[in-house]
Each structure stands twice: as structure tokens, then as C-alpha cells.
Amino acid sequence: MNHSEAAEKFTKDVDRTTWHDKTLWFVREKRDKAVFQIPEWEALREAGSRIKHNALSNLDEYLLEFEQNALKNGVKVHWAADGHEHNEIVLQILKETGATQMVKSKSMLTEECHLNEFLIEKGVDVVDTDLGERVVQLANEPPSHIVMPCIHWKKEEIGELFHEHLGTEKGASDPKYLAEAARQHLREKFMTRRAALTGVNFAVAETGGFVVCTNEGNADMGAHLADVHIASMGIEKIIPKARHLGVFLRLLARSATGQPITTYSSHFHRPRQGQTMHIIIVDNGRTTQLGRPDFRNSLKCIRCGACMNTCPVYRRSGGHSYHNAVAGPIGSILAPNLDMRKNADLPFASTLCGSCSNVCPVKIDIHDQLYKWRQVLAAEGYVDSTKKQGMKLMASVLSNPKLFRFSGKAGRTLMRLAPFSVSNPLNPWYKQREMPEPPKESFREWYVNREKK
Image (tube, rainbow, N blue to C red; front, top):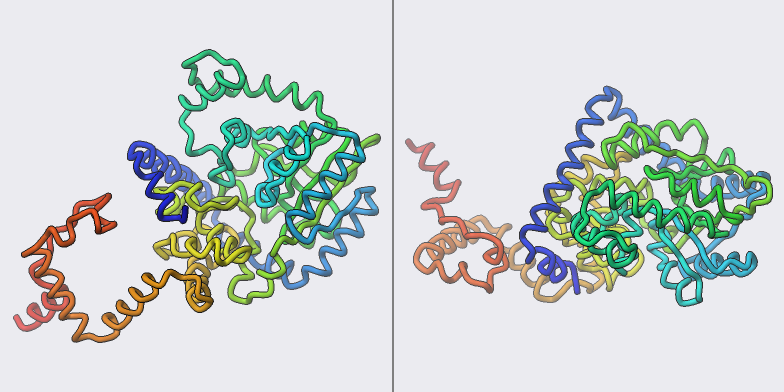
């Protein structure tokens, strides 16, 4: 299904849609309260944007510097051109270790590479240890949000899921009870798995170290108890200096959940004694995006999810309607880079209101890129012919004042004399709304008459 079809399926459950919308807006309000407490917030955004711009402009040098310093620290460094190569490297590391079971903390890169499915097919038992990720894994579905993977689930539904898979009491829905059940379930996994995989929030070229940010401590548990720690990072995660971390750690949690800082900001530099540590540096289409001047800024993204929490389309359509690992506005400008034909619908899943760009902590021009992607996709022939002809007709009407005024008057008259022509199921707007009463005159007519008087 494309976005509009999947969104229509999600919005049929009016109660869930309304609840999903309000919940995400609540997170957006928390973000606003957190950032308004910092007088230098805009200076932090500007600093973060400039640091990322510098990193992207000198990406080759910083990545090589990071590799050199990581190797000095005793870390094994791997390079992967795409998702398949990344998955093969992970599998090879597990084979060399003799591990057939692995715990994994949240990593959107591994979702992008479909690592879980790949490893399970190869006979490896993979357990997601982030609570939200574990919920959707048990439900056999992908996450719908990059920070809150199961935001579309209600606590009663999670209670039923845990009853089925973890043996909790039937009908139990108390969040503390369910969280404790998950804690006990996952503790056994942490204690018995020899291999752990984490994502990477920031990789520091100067030190060869990297930082993983979590609120649950699951990344720490996995990495510290396992004999093998694998870290998967996209090439855009690099930052030049350790002192730059202070900027991003202040930006990330406030933008994501309204917290001053994530509960755990874990710094990894070298394996502990008796442990091996691997870092897999992954491209998977990122250099292609880097080579597109209009879209390279999207690689500044620090995966806070703020654009999702504010987007009126995402809040009402749900994350799964974007059919990609990263949903929402940022996903809609990243996904076409990977596959234009498959993701041609996503840049149109936006009102272009600009709220996403306003809240982005590193000042990505998201709504401008959504608009530019539409132009590219139309020029490349990936836009539906009906939509293309409709836009041409609209352009003709909007560029001709006389035709515009005539069309407006004709439309108002038609709505008055034959309301059934627009108030019917063939009109997509009518499916979710009541059509407004047509005005007796247009704004221009009202303004001209007012001036005459």
C-alpha cells in the first residue's frame, strides 16, 4: 500500500487516531517547555547545524581519522557499502565467535538494513532489548516511531501481548507491572547472550570513541555483559571533536522527549579485558544523498523524532503508513534517495506547513526538501499521471486571475445548488469531514465591495 492507502486504513479507527494525535502532540509540548528554559537554544541549534555541516563537508577525512583512532583503541573496524554487506559482516562476526544468540539495543540503521530478518533466517536468535522495540518484535511488526517504537499500541493491548508471550496475568495493563515483567524476561537474555549489538548516536573522529544514548540502560547491559560488542553506525554519525558532544547531548533529548538529557549517555572507547569490540561503518546510499546539493542537509539528522511529533500528517496517519524504517517528514526525504519508485508517494504526505523545520534541532530544511523531492520525482516520471495532470490544471487556474475568479464563483454556485456533487464518498475530503457551507462571496469580492463603500 502507498501512504494514502495505509493512512486510510489507520484512520478508520477514529479513537486510536485521535489518541495517537494527542499523545504525540503532548510530547511536542514537552519539547517546547524544555527548550524554552534555555535562553541559548537557537545558538545551540546553529552550532549543531554548523558542526554537522563541517562533518559532512569533510566526511572522508573524519571517517579515516575515526578509523585510525578506533584501531589504536583495540577496536576492529569494518566498512559496509550497503545493508546486505552490513548484515553479512554481523553474521560473520557471530560465526567467528560461535554465538547463535544476540541481544540488540535500538538501532534504526539495523531496521533500515533488515538485520533481524536476515539473522533469523540464518538461525540466529535476535532479541530486541529496548522495551518498545521488544513489544513490536513480539507483535512481529516494525517500529512506527524512531524514539517511541510502539507509540501506536495501548497499554491494554500490550498487556494481552505479554500475556500471550511472557505469561503475565490476563487483563493486566498496569504499566509498572508490565515493565517489571519485561525486565525479568529480558534479564535472562542479557545474562546468557555472548554477543550484543548497539547503534551509534555519535562517533567522535578525534578519539575513535562513540556514544550510545538510551533511557533504559539496555545498551549498557548488553554491551557490558557480552563477550562481543558490535556497534553499527551510518557514516553521517561522525562528529569532529569530543567537545562537540556537549552541543548534541543538550539538543537530542530535549527535542526527542523533553528531557534535559537522556538517562544514559554511554561512552565507548575500547573493549574491556577479554572482550572484542567491532564497529561497522555503513554507507547504504548516504554518499548518494551527500552528492545531491538540495538534499545533503538531511544527513545532519540526529534521529530525535521531533519532526514526527509535530507533523499533522504523521500524527494522524501513523508511522506504518510510511512503509519505511524511518517514518514522518525526515523519512520522507531520506527514503526516496534509497528507492525513488518505491517511495515516490512519501514527499507528498505533507502539508508543507514547515513545522518540521521549525523544531529540527540541527536546522534541516525538511519542508523545503519535501517540496524539492516532488519536483525531482515528477521530472523523473514517478508521479501518477492523474496527479500530474491535476497539478497542471491547478497551475493554469492559479496563474490566470480571470479564470481563478470564474472557477471560484462556479464552485461556490455548484456547492449551493448541488451540494451532493461534493458531499459524496468520491470526494476524499468528505470521508473524514463535513464540507463547509459555501460563502456568498469570495474574499476578493468582499474586499472590493468594502473599498467601494
